[in-house]
Image (cartoon, rainbow, N blue to C red):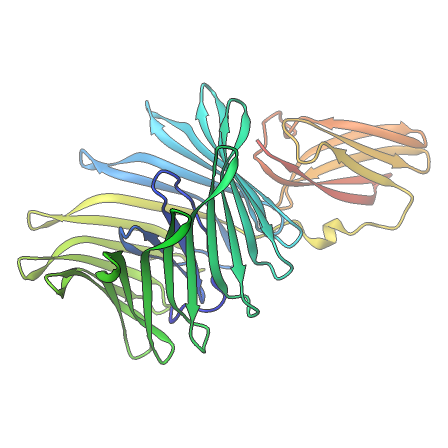
Length: 445
């Protein structure tokens, strides 16, 4: 993690009551989340490789000297690796209970064009909010519409417009709020870059009395194009006043080993907190120590221990809290992965013929009708259904079929009557022991 590059990926989450938002920066191969108003500066390093994808992650809390279930998140992907559904569950009454769900829809370029948040209530999923994105030809998000679900319909809440320069650098963000049946300006963010296309400043403005008024800004300082200092300032009484600052400390190989956080007090910078990092031989963070500045010294606060598998996927994270001179267990995270073994392209190769194959609806829940047309009388016709790992889950067979259109209905169950999971499935038509066509369908629950 060296510098903020021009390939900044920004996700703006508008919290209408707080007028706050989150920037998610894709910094080289790692990711960092910065949230303002300033709470903490948190690094979220990539936890999976190209050969695997995170399928679920569960959080446990330490209570009564044992680890107790707390919450879990399960992810479902399509055939190209896009996260199409995330389900959050919480542990209540000795059982896992549904809590929240997020669904995604992507365009042909794998940009997510719609995201819907739902909450579990009264034994069903209920709409909460919906984001709809528009992208330009360069894959830049240029508009995001946020809606909320009220009285069984989607109602406008906010609209965000993103403007880029000729180098695809994000230079301006304008957020508007839907009020009294029209859009009203809410806030604006202006980005500034240096000659190397590093972000040097972004400044936030609020819309007041029909003009943009300065609110806060971030300043970034680089050495040899490596980010070394970030500063957060507030606009008060017509001038910029220091508020918070953090410094990034690197080793000789330009690997981050410390983050020093400082706050402005009595016209000088004072220590606030310190994070120290240790890595394994593969560059994975295996230890983080978090300390707070108290009584003119660094006092232990939290520490994290991480374990990785042979593919450098984080599989375990243990967090401990320092209390009364001892490190005590606090929380633990377990991450599970599945191999990326999506349906092989050979599986999807269509053999030239006059046969036809399709299903409707697609996506579907809970049933879909698979229709096929054969050009010759057939003694034996099969429809085999496979999951994304290539495992056969269901077989339908028909005999002595005449020329024409035929169909079967799949109820989303396997050969023993068990409901299969949400995800992408392949269905394959075979006629007289010869494969004719293969197609894909998507089950969403």
